[in-house]
Image (tube, rainbow, N blue to C red; front, side, top):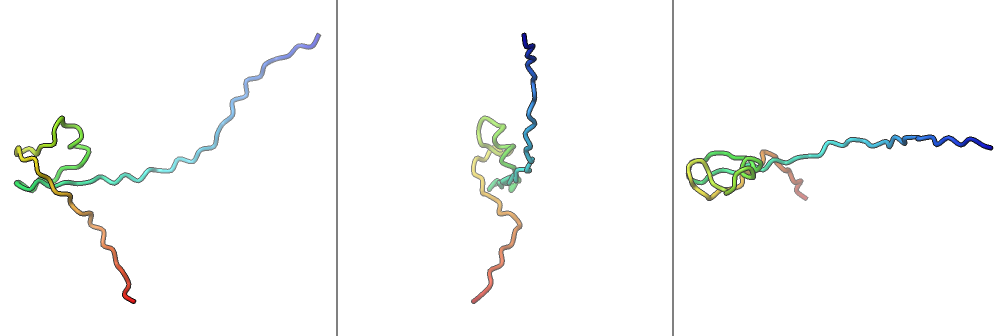
Length: 70
């Protein structure tokens, strides 16, 4: 009689954790020029500024792209 023992070998998967790039979009109210991030706007049930205005513009990031002339 052969005694067989079940061996539980846990395989450790090698996964490299790559940090995800999160680009937080910033919006600006047209009336009072308050800067609000996208995460703050998504928490609220409606898109509205603290002043009550509902129109926002997207603030451009401070990244300058340079293009070489030919």
